[in-house]
Image (cartoon, rainbow, N blue to C red; front, side):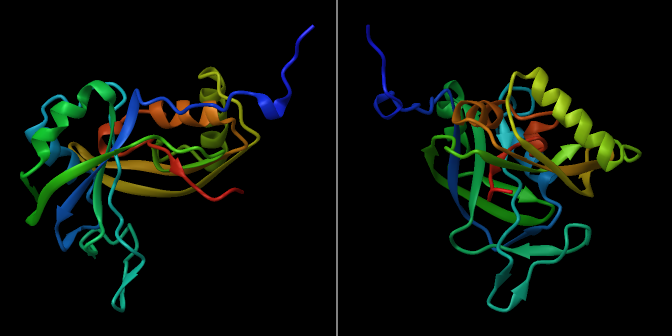
Length: 221
């Protein structure tokens, strides 16, 4: 007879089939509503970006405050945000697209008149966490919080993912190619590492190339 104690179990190794690329940038300001501008500018250089499965864009938010400047609310559409020298452009990509993404290095993106020069990148594995946040998931304007939460719980179950807590947040409307796109935030907690990594890799709902349905690490509920 043989058994394996829990302490002796082989730790889960996070796969590298989907990774985050973190690009250094030279840029001081961008529009506060930058999802579509970023996605469109990237797609001009990487035409496959908007249609490749498992891609994702990390929408840029900047710091809450920089040298006394306070970040405005997302709904203040005409505002800009300040970026620090440590700010990065981050993309989530399948492994086989890493080499293709190098075409961004050295390019200058025009974000509604804001100039962003893209530098070198580093590749990072998805994170080991049991709590994830997606700031923007596509949701119909008429879909209330309860209906949205129930739909998200059902879709996560259909993906075969386990969780113990789910919490939805406020609505935001972000600019899209055909007009405003309504979104809601979602916090998911109580996941195994395997399920957490799977959700980070796949996301939920449409619009991943604009940053919708993309999950990042968050504090526990």
